[in-house]
Length: 367
Image (tube, rainbow, N blue to C red):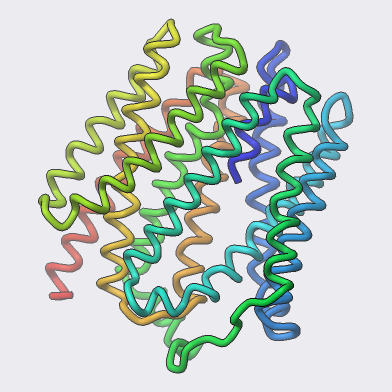
């Protein structure tokens, strides 16, 4: 998922003419693939089971990344759009399979399981970005060929053996899941993650282009700042998980929002590498605590496990994480790359409003 933001400089989108509309198409293609995967995953699970779904998703991801390596510029950008659609399908299928496979852990400790997944997710994004920074001046396709090997390895791991049996009582009826999605709490949680992932991925997808074009940083330096952002996001989540039981959540939220706002302003006004690094530090640290706060609340509110229920919330979050940078591509074509910080600023206000609505709903319902 982090590949696209890290590989855009290698594809030459930091040069003139900018072609930001094509970047918007790329993120939109990933989102379209994730939406397509929702119905396909159910059919594959019913037809061949969890192991087949995981292996197929990993192999599709590997082939899609190899296709993108082959379709690097100067090839037509439409070829990359095709590859990104299939990569989105692979990500959506893998998302469904992984939520099915962690049901035991979720039943034991919902918040810890979701937070652990988020931390590993961030570690993968950090690793991909660092590799892209180190390989930026090498053959462009080497980045994607390396990344294509990772899901291929996991396909072999899943094919060699995985426990596909869900614990008894883990499945709720489809009607119950639909009823839960109609509840105000589930809608608010889904919207909150939709906006928060949009905030995070707006920065993750566009930070290198912003720093190269506005600050004048070299591509390798801009990618290292992006890696710093992922590092702060991941370590901040580790810290948030440890302090949440001991600190009032309202205080944590206030500090996080102020830090994120300050970081966005730094990124907009800075003209040097130090200011860019400090902006990434504050934005990553500010965004870090939101996900653990929401995961803990969801774990308490929905302590039972149904893969379809939580996967639906998380898939909507991923959709928001891709629609936001896609929108930025179309807006930046008109107003310039400086508009990149606008969506995180607006999205942070939406996150605060939704958290307050969730708090109010819990007080009203007594849950």
